[in-house]
Length: 338
Ligand code: AQP
Image (cartoon, rainbow, N blue to C red; front, top):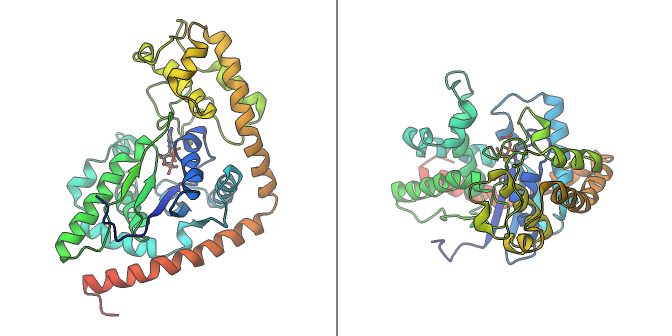
C-alpha cells in the first residue's frame, strides 16, 4: 500500500536504445499521456544511462534520445503539463542508484528474467551495468518518491524489486521514507508481441525490422509489415476465449483493440469469422490512421533539435528541484557527512 502522505506522482521512462516501437507506444506512452491529465504530477524520462548497459554508438544515442523526446511530445505529452527529462541530466538518479546497489541483494538481481533474456548464454561478457540495471531503475522512480509507474507487462518484476528495495531501505534504517510504488499495467496491449513470432516481445533491439512497427515507419511500410505478419490458417474467432492457443492472432487483435480503444470482445464481435486476408488490411488502415499524425509531428520536431534540448534542460531543472532534497535526506539517513 502506498503511504497516503506521498504526493501522487507518476514516473516512467523509455530507453533511447533504438527507435520507438508500437510496443512502447501502446504499452507505455498512451497511458503516460492519459495520466498527465489525471490527478498526478508526471515525470517522463529518456533513460539514456540504461541504454548504455549495452553498446550504443554515441551519435546514435544522442539522435535516439532527441527522437524519443520528439515521440513523447508528438504522442501528446506536453512539457507544460509533464516534466520531460533525459536521465543523465539529473545526476541524482545515478547517485541514489549507487545507494540502492548497496541495498539490493545479489540473489534478487539473479532472479531478474530480463537480465537472463538479454544476457542469454553470454553472462560473463555482458556489462556489470546490465546486471545492476534494476537498482538504477528503482532509483529513477524513488528519487521522486513516485507513487505510480505506468509500464508494460515486461517491467512488472522490476517494479516488484523497486518495492523490495524501498522496503529494505526503510526497514534497515528504521524510517518510512520511500513509498511502495504501484505499477500501472493497464489496457488491451500491455505486452505487444513480435510480428514474426507471437512468443517474443516486440522490441526495438530485435535484429529483424519486420518484427516490429516503428513509430517512424511510413504508411507503406506499416501495411507491408502487417501483411507479412505471421498468422495461422484459421478464421478469427467471435470470442476472446477462441484466441487462447493462437498467440499471433491474439497479438493482432490486441493491437487492433488498443489502437481502436475497444475491448477485445468488441473487436471480435465485428471481425469474428473473417480470414486474416480481410482483417489485416483493416488493421493496417487503423494503424496508419493512428500513427501517421505522430510520425509527421515527430519529423517536424526533429527539424529543430535545439528546441528539444531546451525542453530537456528545463525539465532537468524542474526535476532536480524535486530530486535534490530527497537525495540530501537519503544521504543524511545513511550517515553521509554533508
Ligand atoms: N512489446 C511491448 N509491449 C508492451 N509494452 C512494451 N514496452 C516495451 N516493449 C513493449 C514498454 O515500454 C516501456 C519502455 O521500455 P524500454 O525501452 O525502457 O525497455 P524495454 O522494455 O526493454 O523495451 P524494448 O523495446 O524491448 O527495448 P530494448 O530492445 O532496448 O530492450 C516500458 O514500460 C515497457 O514495459
